Length: 552
Image (tube, rainbow, N blue to C red):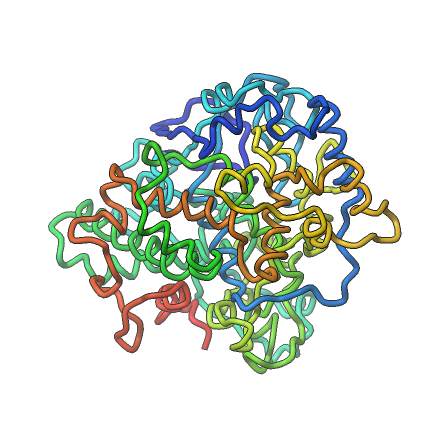
């Protein structure tokens, strides 16, 4: 694979790429998606259904709540999920319908696939054209292609440039140092109390571009720092293991496999157990992979079920000693990192004009970001139909239908990709669907400047025919109190992630590798106390341990 250059959710670039290797998408339930009424409100045309969805979006605004509901999960799980999503799915291509591209806006922008655009045209009559023309830039999803691409021996010079001349380690940059005047503009702390990480590493950047394998991973600061942490973990593993190998290529290959297995282990044994309904993961691990072919990501997953993370984004974070809780975990927030800060301190937002690299006052403190609510950390927000205001107002303009908020883009992706309604998918899994009253209870209450969303939903039939993405958020709120996914979304996520790793043709996964299943006890990587790295928290803390990025 080549560099994924778009800073947005999707890319409209379908030109041939040097060394490009891709995989097709699939549908878990192709017959349901091929139904002529898939995703259409009963008795309506595609145009009428599109108009109804647009009306819902125009009247959807963040609720004016003093405090949004937080859950037990640490904040890092929101962004680890985003990293996993980028490592699974990078759509490229189009249906050659309505090729006009809308200019990007806001942080994520509005780039979308030709033919899956936000206008009333381009909805296909069957899934055939979608699967034929839309491909995944990840030939082998969930193998850290978004971190490594195809490595230092890639035919693409842009990929080779990600690595040091030794052809084993990642190139790294150094954080910038701000003047007292610059510091005064971004923090309320007295100058002599500002914590720095002098000499801390950063991902390389040039002229507003992140020089990493998947540039989408620089669209917010926590995600960017997570990507960096995996680069540091890789380089540290090379330092440890290089003497054991005769050639740089052999060392790189072994270290990439090792880091990938740690990553896949964390997905299976830390991430999924915390986000899936009870019992779903165990059932998926005990059953054969439901995927008909290896390395194919289902549309029901990438378009609907795995987009729950948008609701987990918080308005502010305990990011580090400068922007969070000066007294440490469990203390009151003083000068927190806002969601806008996380957007601003990235390459494509220009580091808020404070230099080409991340300032050394903005290095992530992984101890804080990986603590749960019970541990006094910075928790994730609940999984439901309630969003941090900037997710709608900054990440796209919700009042502009031509661009559309992230809310609009998510429901229209499902519409154009023929994703069946949530109630239909529930029936396919043999799960009793939510009642109309339950769906209504999960919708936000009326705000002063909009129509009553619950009345609109009842009028248009949305309470009994709910777009899958919205249904899964409602299901999480009703069935799990927003703490984890509901039964149908959990099944789709488990069928995809476990299915990809378990498929018999995926010979190198953590479940199928020789001598598998692989466990961290087999790894030479350990934390400072000599313990194996068995969680996302342990992995990230080990990645920065002993480096200038460690906050002490």
